[in-house]
Image 1 (cartoon, rainbow, N blue to C red):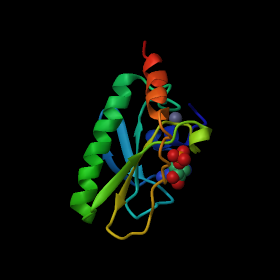
Image 2: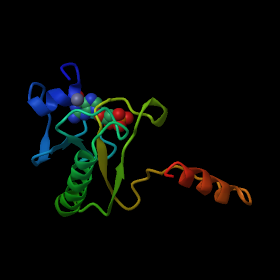
Image 3: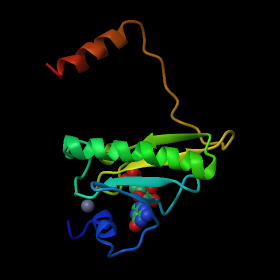
Image 4: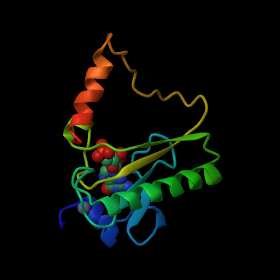
Length: 136
Ligand code: 5GP
Ligand code: ZN
């Protein structure tokens, strides 16, 4: 995809601070890190998001994300990591080349995850059934 910024990073035509690479994936520092060391893991082969990516490519990305998580623990002393991915605009995706964020986290760093709301009585069962049916 000639106009895709992450394809350009894979091709080396725009710079990035690369931290890990294997046959199918590349990991590099996010330019606007939540915490220093915030890394993006991408498939080298263009796919827009989790809906479009081939299963083997996705497996490779998740494998690399796990490796990067260990690297951030070892190199930075991260106490934890968030492994997260935004897919499509409704979910906050800005760059439409599939990617996984691996964000190093430290005790007391102050970032908060989403706040959930409990289901009302009976709603969780209905919801689970609806989702299960999609796999039928
Ligand atoms: P998302 O699509 O998951 O919402 O966010 C895309 C992420 O890519 C953002 O965190 C943003 O900082 C990062 N990003 C956008 N453009 C570039 C770039 O040219 N280089 C790098 N290294 N990161 C980028
Ligand atoms: Zn791309």
